[in-house]
Amino acid sequence: MASPPVTLPLSAAARRAASISSGRPPTPVPDSNDDEWTPSSWQSKPMQQTVTYPDRTGVETALRKLESLPPLVTPTEIVRLREALAEVADGKAFLLQGGDCAELFDYCTESQIDAKLKLLLQMSLVLIWGGNIPVVRIGRIAGQFAKPRSSATEKLKDGREILSFRGDNVNGFDVDERTPDPGRLVNAYFHSAATINYLRAQLASGFADLHYPFEWTLSHVQDSEAKEAYQKIVDSIHDAIRFMRTIGADKSPSLGSVDLYTSHEGLLLEYEQSLTRLLKHPSTGELKYWNTSAHFLWIGDRTRQLDGAHVEYFRGIQNPIGIKVGPSMKPEELVRLLGIVDSRKEKGRVTLITRYGCDKIEECLPKHIEAVKKTDHKVVWQCDPMHGNTRTATNSSAAYKTRQFSSIISELSSALKIHKDHGSQLGGVHLELTGEAVTECVGGSQGLTDQDLSLNYTSYCDPRLNNKQALEAAFLIANYYREGTLMENV
Image (cartoon, rainbow, N blue to C red; front, side, top):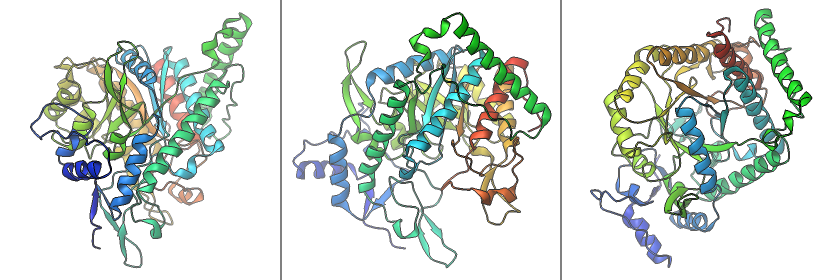
């Protein structure tokens, strides 16, 4: 099908011209060989995963609106996360990051947000028990609306070729809504704002208060040995909470609330630029550029080109950032990339999110660890055991994408062992999960099979762990830190 005439991002010249014609001061766009960074300097670099819009006026209207809206997060919050990630880099805390593969605007409901929040809090409580260290919580939430695609189009069963679904902030999943709509950029902001506002309200109102612990349901666990092990963990947590109440140690305000930070893949750079603000650093008072769309953003495996637009944008913002590291990343490329985005070698500035697959991690991760060890970069190592373990179900009623729980745990187990063997530290885990009882990943204590996928498969992109599988993963990680090994009967 013919491509519409306007592509996001706009070219640097077009962006400048549009700014002038709209009465706004022109956005400075340096030459490609200029080392100075600005929020728009990425426009002079080659761009991957561009989005093509038919409505140029609509794009400019949406971006002007975004530029006028208040920040979604503050420098104070961002600095607090950076300090927490520095603790993770030192092995003094553990990073739990999880949420939807691709958020939908329809997920912005009280029940769905509560379900994710409850799950992340339960998982973090289990991990605190297991590791005896604080847990830093980051949700893939309040902005994870855009998704990279391997192909710009897809074919329907009737032979029609349509644009691929790129996420709710670009187009709709319905085949009649595949034309990119710039108005969705503004909708994404307001859905993010509503989600963040509700999260803050819930946490401030005692949702995480240990005086009201959540119910732990283990009736789904079919294996008696696993059920006994999980029940011991739950009993230990309850015993610890009761003891704290008995001696009055639960009166601290810090036990009534927790920090939960937001994150998403920084894919649509015009959106990210429009929410980049020049604000004072809360400690030094210096004016710095902050991305105020989320506390934490990451560069995807498809957009980490050394000379690309995404790397150029990410190198200049003050937020802590993540980098997806897959099998195609050469060790020397990783070192060069760190030199670009972390030139000052700041502890906790970069989180390396490794995603190889259980069959490739043994080959890839040791080389990456050793390459980084030869530098002075103090990174957070985080395992994403989801993305490298996706397969198409072969004996289900439809061609569902799925992930085997045992493969997820296998990659996580390998990551723990490899880091230990190489004198490194696995600082966290990155999971695609939902608080709902979906049937998208198979295996685990529920014993889901490919035939069960059709029961409640609701993802519009990649398969997610359901609430029981995600909590089980937390149990297994906690048990590892207590016993030194992950259980193998999953």
